[in-house]
Length: 198
Image (spheres, one colour):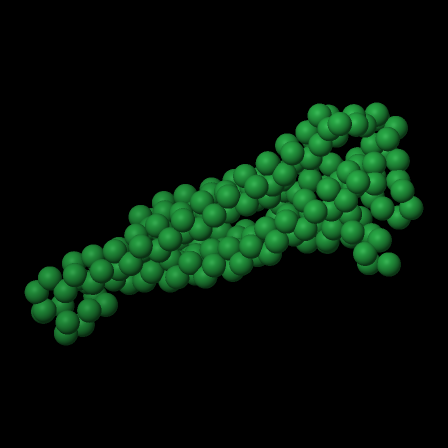
C-alpha cells in the first residue's frame, strides 16, 4: 500500500502544478474582464451624441469610434474564451487524474479492500484520503469553471445593455472564486504530503 500512496503523491505533485497554472489563468481572466468592462462602460458615453461637442461635426466619427471599441471588445472576448479553454484543460486534467487514481485501486496488481483504503502507514495519508482529495479538487474546479463560463457569457450580453452594478457583481464573482476555498485546497495538499511537512 505504501507504494500506491507514493504513486498518489506523484499525481498530487502534478496536480499542484496545475493549481499554480489555474492561479495564473485566474489573474489573466480577471485582467481581460476588467479591460472588457472598461469598454462596455465607455459604450454608453460613446453612443450619446451630446458627448462629442465640436467633434460631432466630423462626419461619421460616432460610428467610427463605436466600431473601433466594438472591435476591441470582440478581441478581448475571444481572448477570454481562449483562457476559458485553458481552464477547461485544467479541469480535464483533474478529471483524468481522478479516473487514473480510481483505476489504481481497482485495477492494480493488488486490489485494495475497503479496510486497506482507510489504512494509514505512519503519518502518510490513506488511499481513501488521496482519492477524496482528487475528487474534491476536481469537483471544486469543475464548478468554478462552469461559473466562469457563465460570467463570460453574461459579460457578452452586457455589451448590448450595459449596467455598472451588473458589471461590478460579475467582477466580484470572478475575483472571489466561490467554489474554491483556498484553505480547503491547501488542507488536501497538507494531508497528502504530511510526512514531507514534518
